[in-house]
Length: 461
Image 1 (cartoon, rainbow, N blue to C red):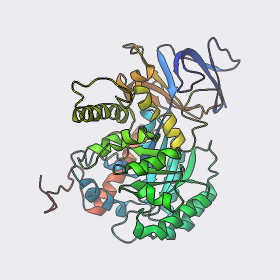
Image 2: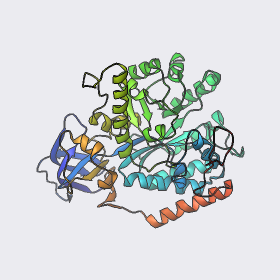
Image 3: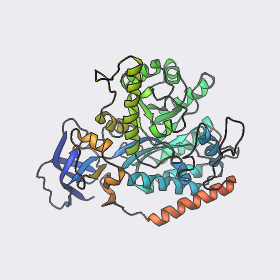
Image 4: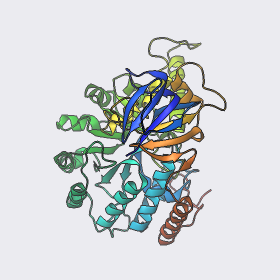
């Protein structure tokens, strides 16, 4: 593979040894070879990075890429309307639709600076669906985890794959096709069924199965005590990533923090429907839990992690202020531990923390020699870089529109503002074709979600 030398950039490395520095970055093949001033390399393509911030590619720890065709369908949703509108659509998604949705989602994510994605795929109804999902991830050039969900979403009851252990054989088939080496661009993970006392036997078997394959696991953690439950049964570990976790108890978070665990949260999706507490971010952070962000559902918002970071930062400051006033700290003032997050803390939630949560923290998420060349060029030339910590510029003063170039494993996926090797018109047409096919099968139309009112019926606007 080729050598690429980025000259005269500002490196926001997220690496303690390299730091933040005006420097050059030499990429040799898939790997960052050197970071330093006045670098030269025979035969390297030289890229002028003047006015650019060179930073690690961002990672998403929880997303449902199959929902890409329904872009914005639940933007006006409230309460539980996401579940009544979107999950039933899984019954009419065929493998071709699934490929189109996942591929389009990956391309949009890459365009906005996300180089790594945990795709929590809960619409797998057949082995052909699983194959299509893997193929789409591979063709996109994304560094991706295919999260094969053991539950499945099929309201029709016609799925070729029953839930739970009935899926083990097909997951083993997929595992046989993937090396799951850390440097592999497509890896496998297993997404567990519901964690509860009633399902103890099944979920413990699922954890054992997941580890027998040498892969990571995740699950939708939507009730208090789930982490403590797994820990009491001796199976909780940092290789199992809870997603959401809004109702985790302090005891849950103590356990997670003590083992160096991660909590994946999706700030926009968690807050849009008014249903969930967000106190777990601060409570977890103070207990050593590493917070990692994700985008979750494209049926509400755009792909990309800039807006997830910004909402995380401001939402937590708002909640910090509420707590201060409740504790009679008025006017509020700075004291140890308050505010909870710095902008650098928040940037870690999409770089180092996410890379570690996805099991590849020693090869991505930082810009340093020996790391994979997953990086972004973020343009600061037009309006200048913000004062203070450079992380603050990314979190508060930039947008995904500033991302000019994206590299994954040494290959440009976006360059000078345009995607590389992607037929954008074909991608969009395939996404819309998939949407129309799925809606036709489900008896739905674009722009007309079903709205409910106090559970008394649908169609009330």
